[in-house]
Image (tube, rainbow, N blue to C red; front, side, top):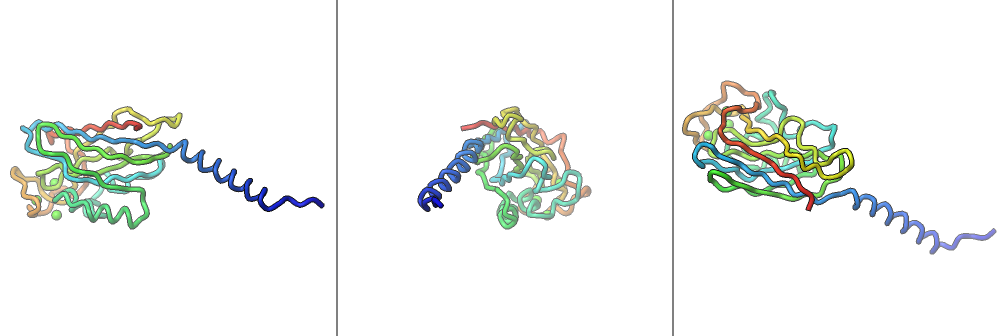
Amino acid sequence: MKRTPFFLLGAALVAIALVGCESAVSTAKLVKVTISYEDETGGTRHLSPGVWVLVGSDQANPLFTQDSADGKAMGLEPLAETGMRADLAAYLKNHGMVSGVFAGADTGMTGMTSFSLIATPGSKLYFATMVAPSNDWFAAPGAGGIELFDEDGAVNTAAPTIYVWDAGTEEDVMNPHPPDDDGPDDDPTVRILTDSMFSVTVKVEEI
Ligand SMILES: [Ca+2]
Ligand SMILES: [Ca+2]
Ligand SMILES: [Ca+2]
């Protein structure tokens, strides 16, 4: 019986491995996310450094649940009240999630920050960044997150809706005092603010 030389078997296995890699690499995209804001209160606010996380399309927001009293969970409270992102970043890392951090945006009538990530089709993006000064406000996508790809696997460049949220962990006052605590919020739920006069937009693009 003729036996296949080992080196031929080895070459075949390498070829299979390379094809597999090529397939994964060709669907992954380098994506740039730019977060911009407009401050209608005279340019007195800015965005603090934030965190981002990628999940599958069928997964829920890992940072918080809308209209639930979980603002104190997972490190959202220090991020929303003082701009300290370390707890939330550590939580995501410890749970093995694909996540990262990004820089803040300077105070002014408008401001901008951006970050890049590698994502594959089916990925959904969430992020959180404090609106400062405030007692517990932060900017983040809606409950559905940001779908980074369309049905054809191309990067989805449609502008997602971004909200300013109240983390429900500290009462809102006229002159907020981060990092001092002005006491518990009357409403402990993480909810969308409709009157913050601070609007946030996001641009997603392949680079
Ligand atoms: Ca607090
Ligand atoms: Ca509040
Ligand atoms: Ca405060």
